[in-house]
Image (cartoon, rainbow, N blue to C red; front, top):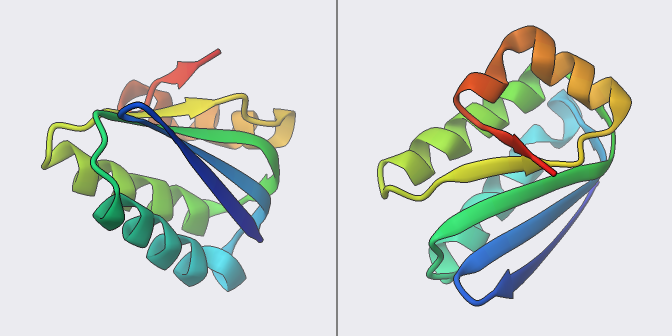
Length: 102
């Protein structure tokens, strides 16, 4: 699992590359929380074009980050999910709380 990020003004762009499953969830959770702690942002965009697989544990990671950011009034968006990941996210209804953007 690889996580990259870039701050563009106050917009934080994050790229998840690899598989977001139980074996990588703790790493992703801790890494994202550290990125959020060390950057002052107005929005977070997670690009999932490089994510080849995500299971329910990955959904939990996303929802946890959503709640953390929402408590600070910072919106979270999902961008470019791969076909497999988009199917999982659509089936769970997560786009109702974490919008997908192009």
